[in-house]
Length: 76
Image (cartoon, rainbow, N blue to C red; front, top):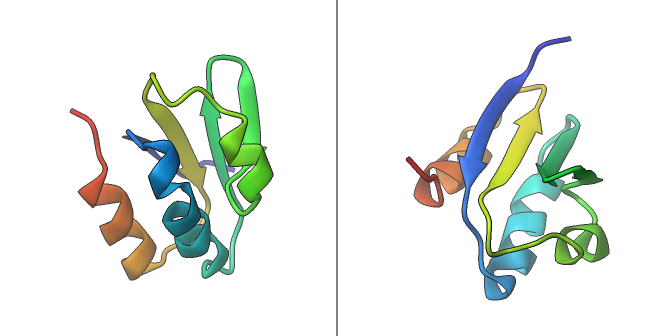
């Protein structure tokens, strides 16, 4: 199943808002960097990632508010 993939940059202070936005989606959302992929709806999982590098967000549905949030934090 092919979904949408976006690259974003977050700071640790933005994790709570990111997880909150992902939790409102009724589909799976994953976030990854390097070899690690975690459920974007898990605050502890997301905090375990490296925020010095861009994060790759993969999701398999459509939520206008979530996509707007990702666009605000997108990296080129």
